[in-house]
Image 1: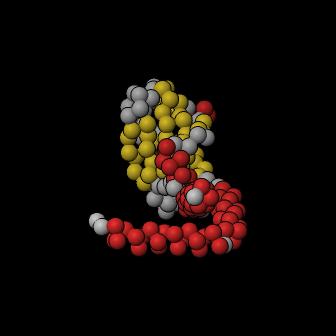
Image 2: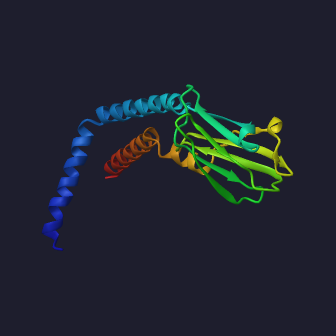
Amino acid sequence: MTCSAAQPAASQFLGVSRRLRGSRRQVGAGVLTALAASAALLASASRVEAHAIESSITRVASLNNSLMVSSQFSSGQPTVDAKVRLIAPGGAAIELGRTNGQGQLSFALPKGASGDWEVQVDGGPGHRDYLTMPVQAGKAQLDRLSERELPGLGDSLATLLHPGVLALGGLCGVAGVLIGLDRRRRRG
């Protein structure tokens, strides 16, 4: 590449710097406004993601002592087509199927099951429920059922990939570039 080919690119960069320098206060105010708007978006996102899943497990006597998981959103709407998994005490996962139009799925425990089994209802990122079910001699102890509040890795990634978080990160990056350009210009 020759020097003459590099000169237009450098002068174009200086032109951008000159334009930014002329309206530095406007750019700064714009970045601050955008950051404030992103913060407001993130604050409202917690209300959107508060659409939690509430699940329960009952015994179905007519189906040879099978169990039924029922799941619904906090709004009362059934969690339709959610994946349901049964996790053995050793960590092995058994895919049970998907909830029906009423947010329900019936299943049976493996014969001779014992220990604390986990039932996971996965309605998509940000919409999961985890129930710990103690089992003795193949029979679920539903009176000792407990819910786990900690989100899984998928929930954490979904939060990180939320459009508001991405927008805020992008704006912080733009602000950093503008500050760097301004410092570079001042040094000379």
